Amino acid sequence: MSDVTGNVYIVYGKQCEEISKEIVKSQYAALFKSVVIDDFLTDETVTGDDRVIICGSTSEIKQILKKASVNGCSVALLAQKNQNTLRSTFGIPKNREESLKVALESEPKPLDLLYVNDEIVLWGAVIGDAPPLTYSSAVYRETTFVERYKLLVGALKKLKHLKQNKIKLITAKGQEINTSASGVVIIEHDNHTGASSLVQGFLSVNDGKLAALLLSPASIADYLYYLYVSIFKKSKNTNLPDSVGFVKSESLGIESVQPLDVMVDGENITQTPVEFVVKKQAVRFIAGEKFWAEVKNESSDKETLKLSGLPVTNEEVSYAQDVLPFFTHASENRYKDLFSDLRKQGKTESTYVTLMFLSTILATVGLFLNSASVVIGAMLLAPLMQPIVSTAMGVLRSDQSLLFSSIKTVLVGVVIALFSAAVIALLLPLENLTDEISARLSPSLLDLMVALVSGVAAAYAQNNEKIVGSLAGVSIAVALVPPLATAGVGLGWMEMDIFYPAFLLFVTNLVGIIFAASLTFLVMGFSPIKRAKKGLAYALVTSLIVAIPLYLSFTTMAFDSRILSALEQKEYLVSGKIVQIENVALKHTDVLVVKCDFIVQEMLSHDELTEFKQTLQAELDMPFALEVVQRVRL
Image 1: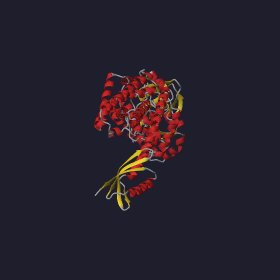
Image 2 (image 1 turned 180 degrees about the vertical axis):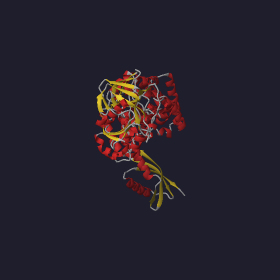
Image 3 (image 1 turned 120 degrees about the vertical axis):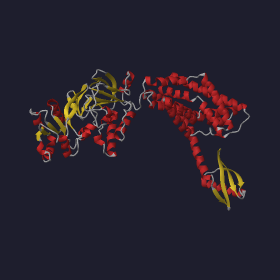
Image 4 (image 1 turned 90 degrees about the vertical axis):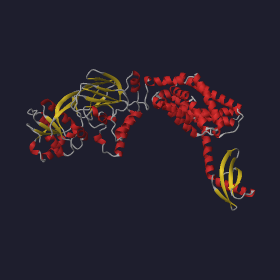
């Protein structure tokens, strides 16, 4: 036992009478006096040389700490079975004998006390609502997945009421912070919650400063992410998430436009406005080495402010006070540069016209040469993607100036591509349908899927300078100019069977990119949902209309795939002769025409062919016309 010149008291409250009886039977029983808390509080003989071991409720512990801060006696804590947060915060051993040993043998050290309106805060206070930051590891560290799921469901129920509140913070040095937040968490040292885990490096037990974390989720999506990290993620993240602010000061005044509930140590005690003050080294505290090892004993007069992710401008604060949006909102300052770039890209300039001519010529020649590399080069050169992305932003925000300018630029590009390809098709003495041309004549829902994914990628890349170069890859994936060039070839040949599917493929890409890019910009916060509804509705309806012929084409593609897989490379026995089917091709007319090669060792007669056709029709369960080339393999 450390040198103790005064008395040692075991002070217990009403809930700890059974515990006090256990302590009397311990090996340390002869060393202390057992006193009921009410008697101890009225005892005027307690001095700074005495040591007090307290077991009681939260309010009873605070009463003892207040007295200890006045008369200078040292204090140790014993935790009851249900006081998990208290045990976790102050590093109190679970074993009773071990707790008594720490209380009797450890040296007292100075500890700061945090007050709110003259009320002691033991482990933390919450203003408003900040669930992800207040969840205690002591509560769910060892819980099952099902129990954590229930905790998540409870937090999700708060979504309907969760909103930002305009607040004003005033630090000890008079710095004023006007922002909005759903809640503020105030702690003095590590209390093993989500809040303290984020700022462990800034916490100390005796530096005279409190730590305040402001939860200001920009959207419901942000809030859900915080919940996931707080409840399910095991690894510690030492960086502050976006929309979480941090203030460290000797005191902090908090005001709000609407009164907010103030919860201290799990109990509602008052409403804003409130003032938190730290009394430096106010009490001599006894704890184990684990408690003192986890905190820093550093002191500095500097205040710490980390508020870069919080609403600051009037626009941001005003927007945040509305019902929490599902997606993040980007302020005017944040999208000023993006809007400037999009407006430039939406204009019809000489460079754009020149590149459209060159890329179309390159694509058309590549189609006739049946050269994939030349066609890819045309995709890279084509400037169509940029005004289409600008159109998407115009649709989203109902910005008529940006929308009309971008649509005009896109239409100019379309006319240039169709005209150039048609002229080249008329001038060249070639009318063969190459594989590269044929590849653009069967658009389906799969092409719409490619366009949608490309639209998301294009919008994301447009807003990120580090990956804006990826737009070239998006252009290759979605291929805007080659379908236009193919449609132009159809015009030049006056073949509507070529023009229609090729132009439908371009329209599919165009509509899919605009819809997906608009939706992506919405998720990234470049328009409130109320403003975006109209434009997104138009884009969605247009996408659905385009999807109708694509669906029909897709069903045909699926039908053809089933027929081909049923026939290709199959062997049959016809009148004792082995027949292998190869090179199957289908042609859709009034009657389905199946073209294929029969690989035989002996030619089939007409009757045998007729019999074999009937066998195939029965197998496929459909009538069709059969065009066959017999090849003899010896």
